[in-house]
Image (cartoon, rainbow, N blue to C red):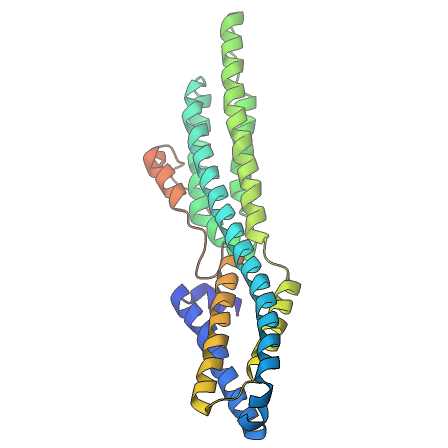
Length: 275
């Protein structure tokens, strides 16, 4: 199921989420009507209508909450990924205050990290995995900055300036590290299965209430299909938003591409970066 959602276009997945339950509900309702005629149901419309309004309202609240929660998680994941890319660019720029050859080394490592995250780690996030090479590259940046030697004949003022410059770069790198941790957490975050189970049971109960109304067969089956299809559509929205780095609708790496191109990182990266 998960693999299918990864390869299906979003619009097709949503159509299937709406159409398949609608068809199933219509078939089941048609079978139900063969045993229970509309004449038996019509006298009880007042009671059934009152009850279905209560059940529908309760279900709508839960469904709206899940849609909002799924969208909030997805939006936060996209913002965290974009923020990490922005902080990598900031660290790349502030590395210019470091002395050579530390400056060149730091920029090379950051360029390698940016390419590694975009080209290698991004697909792994769909499986809740991280790229260990990308993690090691970020650790090497910290080590390179921390071990930057102070010129042996530097004055106290020059040594202080270099130390301050190193601290600025370290602060930016700490932001990158925090953003990376958030991105990895976002990749693994999803709505608990118990909530999905409750949503499906509520969906089934609401559909069962719809069966208790009686009118012309074609009109009744059409209404059942429309109600079930609408719920299925929203359920599909929740599923698509639930895992930010998989499914057809996923967090993009466009910010990383922009940072790489805008800072001309291709010129700084290691020529051959082995997987």
